[in-house]
Length: 370
Ligand SMILES: Cc1ncc(COP(=O)(O)O)c(C=O)c1O
Image (cartoon, rainbow, N blue to C red; front, side):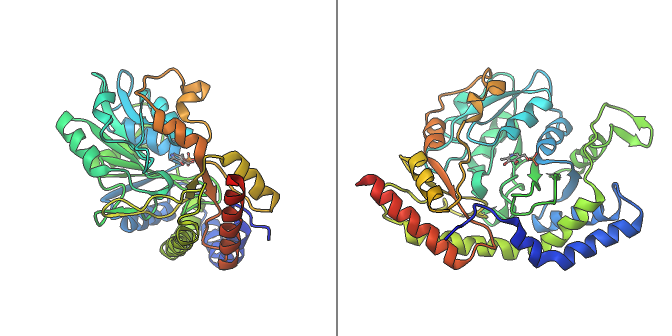
């Protein structure tokens, strides 16, 4: 059985009518930038994640930049983050004018290791950017406790974590602000690029609103230099249609993840993801196993028609653009980058496909061990 790693055409068929209605509404309105759809999406997404304020923007990368800039982070400041992430986490920090500093991840959870965090702080550290990788909440209680003690800001990278919760609260509600991406592969994805900042304080959100459009306080009155990072009316309308299905999609993801967990438990040569930490409810953005012979396993699955991916094969600190920044020891990051393998997981994946993938993983992992 051929199983694609992702297949957006299945969702396209299911949602055709709602998406066409959204397009027609925007088209007929004659308003294409920062209008009623963006405002409504901001309010509806804020409600979904219980955030006091939400401001749409052009991408998740911009959301990180805008959140940091709005909180006053910029040139001369260090921002501690992880290397076990997608490069845009770090690109967003650099675009704000700050210097990234890399902290290792916990070897099991693969999110920022709060034990190593204190030693990674520098005299210039002004903010911490933890990443809720694969939809699994980072250790926010420990991270925010340290931030409070040291007077540091926290911006959560929630690009992969729509609907993830910790101690009964949505991710994004622990820090001063949070960055969300609606890149098409995310649990809530646009038909193109889109992003959003949630913020604890109105003044932070208001500054993001100014910075996303040239720095305008009112039209033709820029008090500080800003970006063009607006969320389009069209993407906002399409995202509203999909937001209505997000909780249902996340439930289906959870079900598929549980089936994988059961099928892969105890299989030599492949390790299912760890159980969530206390109080953590992941949103199952990616289903990531670990395998010592990852690349061979991946090739074998591909030869059986099963698509997989690796998130991420090259840690950010080893990518040339980001190699020169300060860092602590990154052994857990290095090891994970060599072992992680993402299996197909999306709401439209059928039970039969999940069973076929799990069986193939089991068989190939065992045969690699033989
Ligand atoms: C962890 C993480 N941070 C940031 C981003 C950046 O989002 P975008 O592609 O919308 O700029 C992504 C996704 O692409 C991501 O996975």
